[in-house]
Length: 184
Image 1 (cartoon, helix red, strand yellow):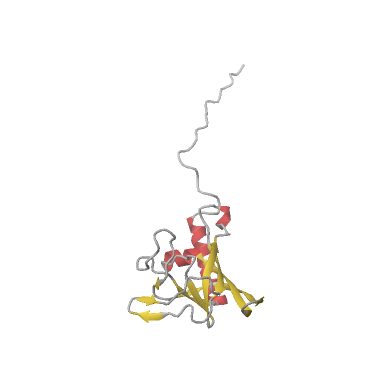
Image 2 (cartoon, rainbow, N blue to C red):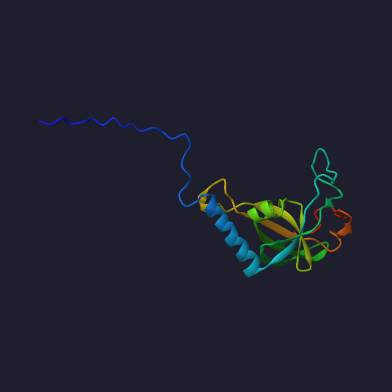
């Protein structure tokens, strides 16, 4: 008669979980490289981004708004721009008004890692020969479903009226005359 051996193997939880399959650091770098090439070399849409200089702008302590904004150097950015068209409105008192809207899809890692740029509401962009103000941002897409790895920033931009945003280049910043009322 043979004796059966008892299994003494017990399962222990590892100290750190294994990296996700097929979605490690190498794969994230590959996706970034492919997105960079597609956006810059194939599609090639550019905007000029005017970031607010947070350190030099005098914000209201209670409301967080600024009457006169100071902008940093304009930056050329490759992005996917979706033109949403011009809407014509008939204002009873003021007559006919046109509103233009674009949606800018930024490659987040390209901006933050390579250009040290952070997309914020209140910044301005130049698309074609028109200026637009960022009025809303979102981060709708995750890389491989990982919550910590988002790779897109979508900015909704409304066209500003002529004369509302008039960049004047001064030494290290762009001082502008910006009206903070809702003139569109």
